[in-house]
Amino acid sequence: YQYLSRYKRKKDLDHFLFTPERTEGTEKECLKLLLEFCGRHNPSWTELSNFTHFLNFQLSKCEKSVFCSPAVGDDFQGF
Image (cartoon, rainbow, N blue to C red):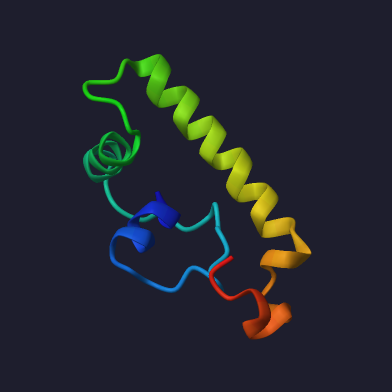
């Protein structure tokens, strides 16, 4: 939710890191955002679950990648 909400508001994601302790938004806002970005019309709970697990996996890998680190500077901006 933290990434998707910032992406929707066109915020810079290059220097953002997920923090599980930080609660943002409501359950209703989260579900609405997931439905919007899921890519399926009227998805099932299984499809939403798969989408969130896949997205979480990809974002976790991205946060750990040296290529996506803020330390690389402008060389890979937006990568």
